[in-house]
Amino acid sequence: MKNTDIKDILCNPKEYLSKTVTVCGWARTIRDSKTMSFMAINDGTSLKHLQIVIDKTKFDENFMNSFSVGCSVEVEGVLVEGAVQKDSVEVNASKITLLGDCPADYPLQKKYHTLEYLRSIPHLRVRTNTFNAMLRVRSKISFAIHEFFQKNNFVYVNTPIFTGSDCEGAGEIFRVTSLSFDKIKSFKTEEEYLKADFFGRRAGLTVSGQLEGEVAAMAMGKIYTFGPTFRAENSNTPRHAAEFWQIEPEVAFAKLMDIIEIAENMIKYIIGYVLDNCKEELAFFDANFEKGLVEKLTKVVNSDFQILDYTDAIELLKKADVQFKYPVEWGLDLQTEHERYITEQVFNKPVFVINYPKKIKSFYMKQNDDGKTVAATDLLVPGVGEIIGCSEREADFDKLLTAMKERNMNLADYKGYMELRKFGSVPHSGFGLGLERIMMYVTGIPNIRDVQLYARTAKDLME
Ligand code: 4AD
Ligand code: MG
Image 1 (spheres, rainbow, N blue to C red):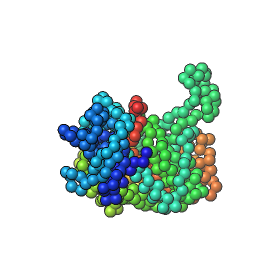
Image 2: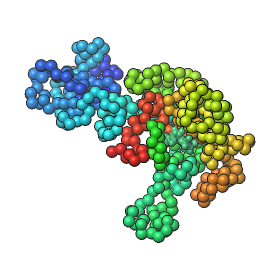
Image 3: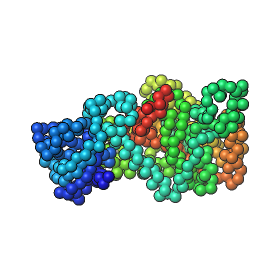
Image 4: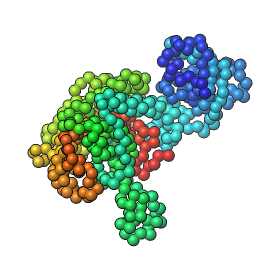
């Protein structure tokens, strides 16, 4: 179909004024007067709708009655200046084709629906302004991430989704099998079952592409992954999804402070890009989800992030005039309430908390000389909490081996990974940015279930 994108018309009306255009879309609203009908259509390219003006006397009455909110149309007509609203344009329809009608049980009849309700109709919620805008911002953020890394000589690699290892060691792996329940039941031992299963061993969905990312970085120097990761995290929070997208750069010849600089530059690049390229969407989110959003994001781009030692964070929390639910003690992990206090109440900007106790962090993190902490950092932001998990990696074979043994890890599953420390090991660092977490930060949408096309959470395979 030779239709023009509504965005192109609205962004550049002069080019189309007084000319015949063909546009397609779904009717968002229809207003009728005696002789005229006004249909606002949207084709997903822009937050703003395009108004179609229909002189009812020129069309068959039955045909006119077939239009209703939600129907899809192709319209041909001349683009003219808006009769009522200044600086607007509209199409005087000369030919209308009803592509698909839409009966009265179409669920999106009202102007406003709650996000909870919209989760029950994921196949239709995309047709609301919120989800329309959300998906465009997500697309632009993804593009900005690729652009940032490509401009800085990073190589994009695709790490496997099936894996036999557990990168974060948290036991949150989704198990993968090709065998039916009846078949599995027929085996006497797990060993027998695993041997008969597709991979002939225990397999699962990856929680992180990092381990394979390190392999690539040990040859390509600077790499990044951008793909789905999976965690059977049974926590029902607004921030955790079972399937989420992660961006994981891995950089050879980089120490903790080097990777922190890259992470800060990347976040600023992403936000700067969205500020420049999603103005309408951000204004919409500012008005409907987080007052002051654009101002917040502008400030983030123009100021330095805070760096705070974990030990100092504990002191700050202990001194805080707040009754926390979870205990604050050196050696304990920071909970969301602590993270949010630090980043929202104390600094009111993004904070890198560095040098966590090694006991609460993953096996691969570089052990600091103090014997107690690791060269790791989480980036915390107001409103969301952690959006990046980051560290310098342990590049020394023996120290890595000790850390793995302390955690009772099955060394045979990590043979190749460990050999990287044997054959030309170098200092290297990396991080994982959760795409949905930065989406929440940039849009102000408060629940992770609403920054994905479909959300996957415990006991809910949205369909
Ligand atoms: O802090 P995490 O667990 O770090 C890693 O997986 C490292 N292997 C990354 C690396 O160094 N290459 O996860 C990284 C980020 C978190 O900061 C968070 O933004 C996001 O992934 N994340 C989740 N997002 C949504 N739902 C979940 N269940 C998430 N778990 C982690
Ligand atoms: Mg983390």
